[in-house]
Length: 117
Length: 118
Image 1 (cartoon, rainbow over the protein chains, first blue to last red):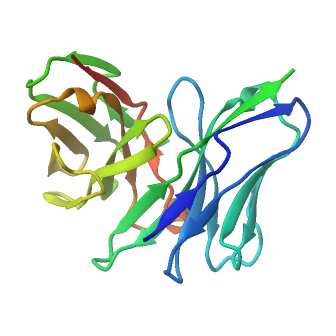
Image 2: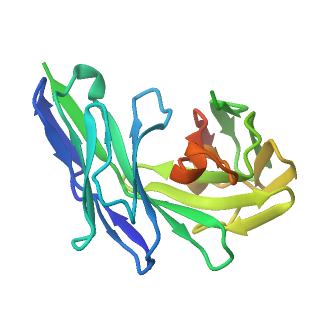
Image 3: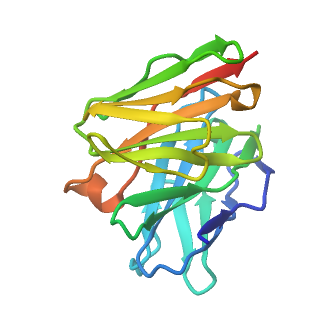
């Protein structure tokens, strides 16, 4: 069964340092998509970055990059130069295509990141 | 910008009450989703809809039903609320068409509805 695993319930990072949030996934599909979302304490889910299974280059969006290792089925999020505003819950998610042709999105349990001044 | 609006941020209901959670999106998205979020469990899919009047069960549909009579609106219904349905409920949508967001398939989320069942 498709699954997303985030093994770090919580992490601390010093302001201005880089941090890596781990995500591994399990799927038998050849075509899938991987996402990272940020959820601040206010509750809204903010899309950060996307990686397609056929994309050969790692995705980057500003200070966010996705370290995609397909053979290891990992899709770690790297945040460079952490800021206090990065303190939030981070979710890794995977899109799978069902037999019916519709899409289903599976989320991990999340990692709570705290940036220290 | 895509806007997904959930009708209530906070609700308190009693056991056995019928509860309606409403979600409206303004970007003509074909696909809409209802998730519940619980600490340590992440987001779990309750139901989703890929078109008007079309729906599919997610991973935890028991105790819930949905309605999608119009493209922009997707309602989650708790026929008889129970205390174990106390949770944060998140609605999301995505386009089924073309363009950047179709290629990435990112979900757009509402702000969430925190339901407490007493």
